[in-house]
Amino acid sequence: MPWREFAAPRSDAWVANARAWLAAPGEPLVPRGAATVLVVRDTANGPAVFVQRRVSTMAFAPSMYVFPGGGVDAEDVAAELGAEAVEAVAEVMGVEVAEAGPLLAAAVREVEEECGLRLSVTDLVPRAHWITPPFEKRRYDTWFFAAALPAGQSAAGASTETDHDAWVLPRSLLTAYAEGHAVMLPPTVVMLEQLAEFASVDEFLADRPVLTAVSPQLVDLGDRLVMRSDIP
Image 1 (spheres, helix red, strand yellow):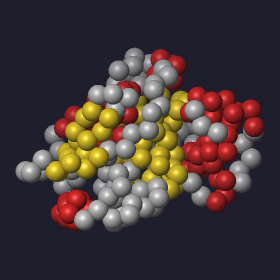
Image 2: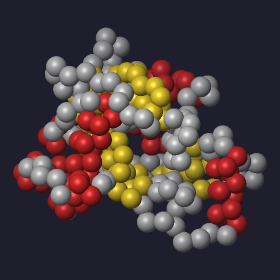
Image 3: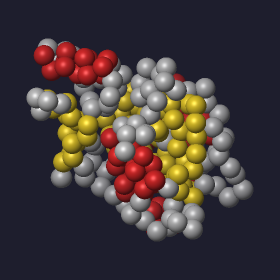
Image 4: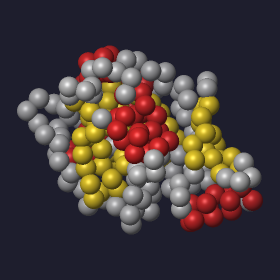
């Protein structure tokens, strides 16, 4: 797999925590299961995706652009989603139904809570699997899904955890990121890069990427820290 290096966030606290870990690695936290969804729609210039910017006071990923999503809750474990639908997505993910079910329930619930969209399990297409590096104080084992904007529905930010939301063309947000005007975690960057390669939502949702788990590794290059990631 090709590897990429992503620059460390411009945060003194993040750098201090990262360097402390490199000096004396501790026992990493067990990552919490999580799901996030790229909700996409067609435009004259290609697929656009719904994004939100997290408020600056968030303990995890402050001021960063993200897709709607969040951690698996107890209610997600008990959610009734339809056995056949869950089995079909679990097969694509390459995991057991018992593991896929709570993740799919979290994806559906979080999208409705954060932007008012009602999705079904059959709307969700697995795109990627990323695990937060071990040095982080909050860790997530996150599955990324894609879904078309349902007909007759509209997305609107409805979360106290975000202060801005928008439909964006992936290349425009990637440009803002490259110029230092937008902050994003590595998986968000990679998901946008992949989306930018497709001419329509149908083509994007028909794609079946390799779903190998990615866990960025912290690397000290002397003059800077980077997160090195093997991208499937």
